[in-house]
Length: 113
Image 1 (cartoon, rainbow, N blue to C red):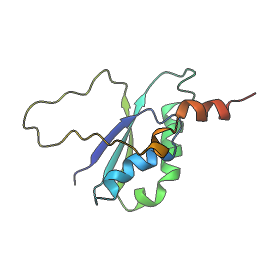
Image 2: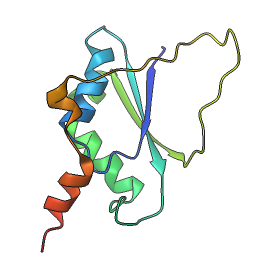
Image 3: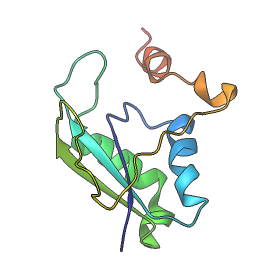
Image 4: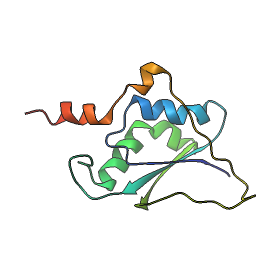
């Protein structure tokens, strides 16, 4: 079974992320969400296990149907491929109402004092 892979920090998971994976799910494709194992800091307040649990909670119905898998991967510096490797590189450009969603702003609201 093939999957459309999405790599990110997902700090935190939000509607823009859901829009993004829906681009492939709506085409009947399966989705693999890869969580980068990044160090905790202001931009990454959740550890990878917390992120994974949050995403799995949000997408439990799709996971149960084997439409989505969620894994933790080592942090990466680049994504590389050779010619004729059997998969595509696809960019999804969100509409304005989705493009303005900011995990930074969401984190600021979550951690307001």
